[in-house]
Length: 355
Image: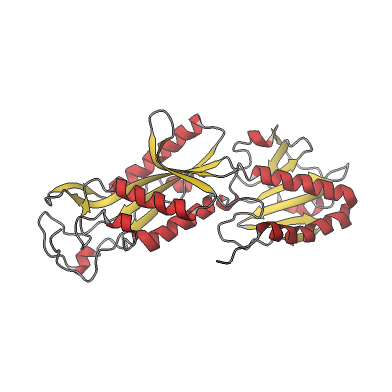
């Protein structure tokens, strides 16, 4: 497998903007640049750039007479104490003592600012340095890395969940997940299949997330267990994953035990939102993001003892996506868009063999 040496790539990037900083500001420019890069690395241990939609500008003054900005800044005394101050569109001055002064975002002042400061900008996955009126875009060759200055975190997890959806969940390609079905036609799930689904997903994420620890059934406080917790190495970032399933389950005799509709997914979203609130209260030093994973095994027209099912009924819910109200992923920045994993039946089978 071809691997990219990130240290060498970072060094290649640095040859571009370090030369620009030296030419514009001399040795002092290089020192300020090094301090700014160090601060960016520290900030990204507390903030996942890949999850941002709002622009972020970080800058460090070189001139004794820096560009003045309008408005009263919000002061963060240390990067290690950073909370939600830079979650939205903002510009933050990085001081020599690693404190931050956070201002409202104003794109119109960037070029003027770059003549008295080294400026770093990140927006929609593109990052660059602006130095003395010129912009130097950084090269980021790996999908899932939100920045060349951070390890993969939430972006890589989102990609992993999407790959699991298509490669494992869709056609039960995982040997563990196959055992969740009552019969080979994949119409009915076994009673309480969530344990099997959790085991399958934990196994997959553990194998593909190199810089993360994946653990099943972790408490977010004294009384609330979440299905999976993912902790990312050398960061203060973690993800909690709540699993729900939809469809019908039966016991070993074929007796119906549970029937879950999309209301189950909606309840799961509310449950995860409450878990996140509790997590922030109990672990304020950790930035937590929630993921709702819905295994959708719904079939139309199922009943106990059924022996035949039309193709259209078996596939009825394939494109019936779930509407969430409220949509927590739209109103919260710590709630990822829910991941619906439709589980296909055996399409060639219209009659169910004995389990």
